Structure formats: C-alpha cells, structure tokens
Amino acid sequence: MQKVYIFGAHSRAQTLAVYLESLYPEIMVEAFLYSNEERNPERIGEVPVLFVDEYTELNTRYPVYIGTRGIYHPQITEHLRSLGFKKLHPITVELDRQLRNAYLKKYFTNTGRSFSKIEKLDEKIERSVAVYVVRSVFDKPLKQPYELASYEKEIQAGAALTRERLSDNMATDDTGKHISARNKQFCELTALYWIWKNAKEDIVGMVHYRRHFILPEDWVERMRRNEVDVILPVPLYVAPSVADNYRERHDVSDWEYMMQYLQENHGAEYSQAEEFFEKNLYSPCNMFIMRKEVLDELCTWLFPILFYAAGYGGEKKDHYQNRYPGFLSERLMSFYFEKHRNRFKVVYADKNFLA
Image (cartoon, rainbow, N blue to C red; front, side, top):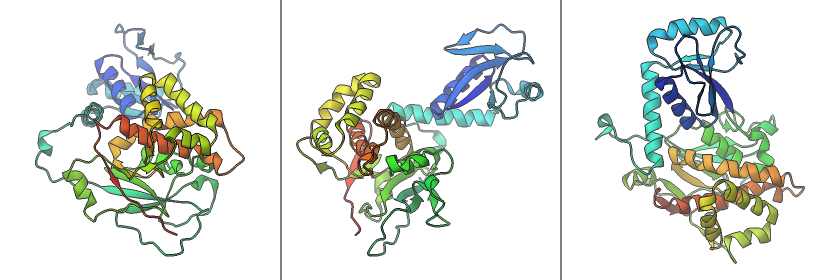
C-alpha cells in the first residue's frame, strides 16, 4: 500500500482523493494538509486534516499531491521542500483533465456503460494487443518448436526466484509491482499479477508455453466489431460439480477458506457462488484475453480472495497441491464472468496443447 498526502482540503483536493484511490487501488490518502489560516474540517471522511508547519509530525518520504489552484503551487512547493518533502506532484490543469477522464471511463465501465467523447466519434480504433505467454526456468522443452504469433509476448514467471533468464528480450514478472517471489505457490498468477499492475496494452491475454488459443487471424477486429469484452477457453465439464470436483482432488479446507472470504466480504454474491459451483462447467487453465479495463476489475476482486485463502492455507509440502491458489483462480474467474454475464460480452475459443 502506497500512502500519500494531499495538500488542500477543499473540493479540488477531495475530488483528487477520489480520483487517486479509484484509479490506483494501491494508493491510500494518509492525510489532507493545509498551511493557511482558513477554517478546515478536522476530518474528511475517515482521513485527518492537518495544519502543516515544522512541528507537524509527517512522513516526508510520502508523495504529496498538491490539489489547490495553480497560482498557489510555487508557494506550497517551496514550503513543503523546506520541510523535507521531495516527492511533490502539483495537479496541473492537464493532469487534472487526464485523471478526470480516466476516472469517468472507469466509472462508466463499472456501471456497464460506455464513456464517449466527441473527438473520439468516427475515429479509427487502433488497439494495442499483447497475449502474454507464461514460461519459467522449470519448463520442460517442447518436442516440436512453436513459433509465437505476432500478438504473443513471452513473460518469465518466478523470475525473482532465480538469476537465470530465459531471454534477454523477455519480460519478467519481478519488475514494477509484482509478487514474483510467490511463484512456487501462485504459479502463473504471478504473471497475471504483473500484467494487471504493469501491462499497458488495451487488450491483454495470458496463455501458457504449452497451451495457446486457437484464433482466427482477424480475431482483434472481430472483438472490436462485435464489442467482445472477454475471450475464455471453452468450458470443461466436471463431475459431480465444480465444488465437489475440487474437493475430491485438492485440500478441502482451501476451498472453504475461499468461500469464507466470499461470505464475509461479498455476502450478496456468496449464494450466487454456491449455486454456480454446484454446477458442472468452468473454463480451465487461467487462460484469457480481455480488455485491460475488465482485467483490472477482475484482479481487484480476485487477488484479495486468493491472498486470504493462501494466508490460511499456507505452504504445502506437496509441490502440486501447493499450487492451490491457481486451482482456485480457475473456478473463481469462471464464476466472476458468469456473475457479470449481463455486463461483459464473453465468447469462447478452443485451445491447443503442445507436447
């Protein structure tokens, strides 16, 4: 969690706080700051409002976002630097515009609507695309070589656990914001976390070095033309149910920890999850292609559940069973898109398996 201060306590600063915490879930506003003689509330919501001088106890390592009128920025910047702050971010008109548009785009997406601007109408849509192919130093070599598709990029998972690099040009999951060191337990999900936190493409995907989607050449254009949000693997039928199939093959307690989190934190959807998991279909392998905004929503919901289950389930001696966060994720991802089937357009694709 990245704690920050916001300088200012009026409407600009309060709006800025909403933008930052909505767009960047890892950010938490520690306090609103001011240094003039104006009357200000003692708190805004749960966040304290503090007068700033040399006697105020503040952590000068925290970034400060200056959410006041621009004419005050030089004076405020000079004051904060004199107190030892170095990471200062004045909110200019242009930056405010960028944050506002990004926030509204996310807000409209969350409500199942599109955020259209006049300058974007009739504009040719060019989407950047990357389907990340997950590899690790522990992979067995393929018997037959596989040529990456033009839209595929390899990423080395678990890179924090080894000095070995599979390629000089390959992305690694130990850069930026990451959980690479948890790869032995979270397997390909360390790459998923990296994609969530670091990828910049409009459309992102994740496949495995042995498993790739079988797609038509014009699949990107088909997604755009048909307003497709998500591509998942063709669902797998399991018996006696998704839940019982997991219980029979893995540690039952991990499933219960997952359901416990849903009951305690997402009570309204707990019964939906129970109903879904009593059925027989889910999309396996943690493979997907989707719009980046959709992935952001999915991962914001998904990872707290997995971290909770792993916090209780801990490490397992059996290497295969230790990968239970990945096994839970397959079921959770399938449930998530069933739950949101009226918001997101989901289509399916076959996958191959390379020997």
